[in-house]
Image (cartoon, rainbow, N blue to C red; front, side, top):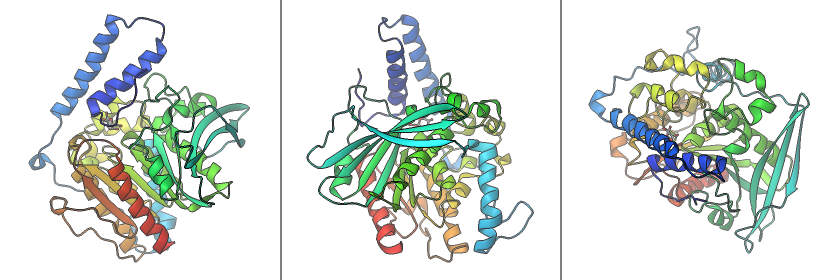
Amino acid sequence: MLKPSNSLDFNKLLLHQRYIWMYTSVTHMTVKPYLIIFLLFVNYSFSMAQHNANYEESKVPDLILPDPFVSLKGKLISTQLDWEEIRRPEILNLFRENVYGNIPADFDTISFSEVQESENPYPEKAILKEVNIAVVRNGKSHTMRLNVFLPKSKKGPFPIFLLINHRPNPGNGELVEEGYWSVAELIDRGYATASFHGETVAPDDAERYSEGILNTLYPEELTKDDGMKTLGAWAWGAMRAMDYFEQDSLFDTKKSALVGHSRSGKATLWAAANDKRWAVAFPNESGCGGAAISRRKYGETIAQINSRFPHWFAENFTAFNDQEETLPVDQHMLASLIAPRALYFASAREDQWADPKGEYISIQLGSKVYSEIYGQNVNFPLAFEELDSPIIQPLAGYHIREGKHNLTWEDWQHFIDFAELQWNQFR
Ligand code: GTR
């Protein structure tokens, strides 16, 4: 079985994932030539999409963005009450209807049990809990797996970092991909950390995405144009993980952080917008449909993402293929929904496909909610081109690091610094 590597670029990652999936589904067959041709085609069409994308600032349209602080009825929103009662629910609903689809909140029961299936890679410093979260609705049940590490040398309650993971499951009993999920370092700093794999909730595959909670728990979503698909399902998974943390006094959920890279970063942002129990959100290099402003059409566009990943967003999102200007929202407004909790965006210099500048502008604009509505002194005075170090400040932060699309220990270090600042000074 292939092992995941820390330095896969987009092309290799895609190829790698497809290969893993096909490998597991044809375990005892020889790989047929048509599979190889198919893989080459997938890789080729992705390279072409990347190649044809716009990477020139001079070709980025003038940005005319929807205003987070004017309601659909034209009311100027300037008070906390109007924000929380009128505009915030409006924006959340616009994203639900047009972009990500529903996150059904109802189920009949939820229960948690521990199993022991994997070897603990850090027996000297961490306790490993493998938790099955069983959710029942209308007589049908779905079980998702959450892997939790706790510091061995300390007593809780522990602050908690949850990672939504979509990278290939090692499949060889290994739970942790070093760097990508920096368990040992988080434990050394005195934190609990947990992760679930997207596949345990909804497969990341256009043919099979319904073979998780959609088929078992929420089949009606499959028939709706604003129905939940994979990214919404992963956000639902993060909520169930939070249900688990909340019922165990070992966890200090007021000091909670949700982390996700790339497609999982998109789910992270959507989960934190919907679930106010998360104190801090860290969407890393989440790009199109995540942190980046869609109307810039720089790097990946809505049309490209919907055609390559038709199982990620609600069906309604396809109406905005090559029609970004008609979207009633843009991603800075999703950022604004996290307030008054804390938000941090991260980019990588060589990750042009995810539009680092669009990610930065999005937090620059979205974080205006902290000053305009909540009276906090948050601002990003530097232009993208002037940035030379991470912005670690109360409530909203950002960094861009050198290198390729990936989640690395360098990213985690800034996340921890930012989270500690929020937890120690402002809670
Ligand atoms: C790419 C996709 C991006 C991003 C990335 C990833 O193929 O175009 O939107 O999600 O995958 O998840 O690594």
